[in-house]
Image (cartoon, rainbow, N blue to C red):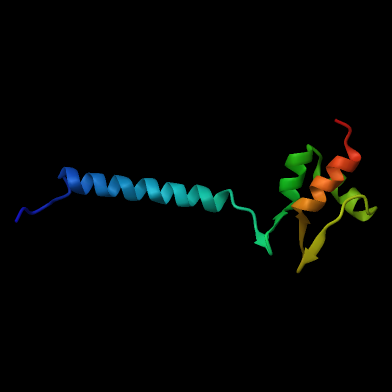
Length: 93
């Protein structure tokens, strides 16, 4: 029976694979969007980036009812389907 140490190819390969898996999981968690009943939800930051508007403009749109949102314990979220519908209705392509 061969004793493996940290310099062996098998151990290096194992730890390299673990590091790659950890990176993949980290990226997936970083890029995820919350789901509820199959619906994706976006944050203020997500919507500002998507629509290329400032957070103040987005707040004005919320205040005037131009864009639909939900608020849960102070967190404002936007349904993906509502945003797509809003874009189709309000932005000429």
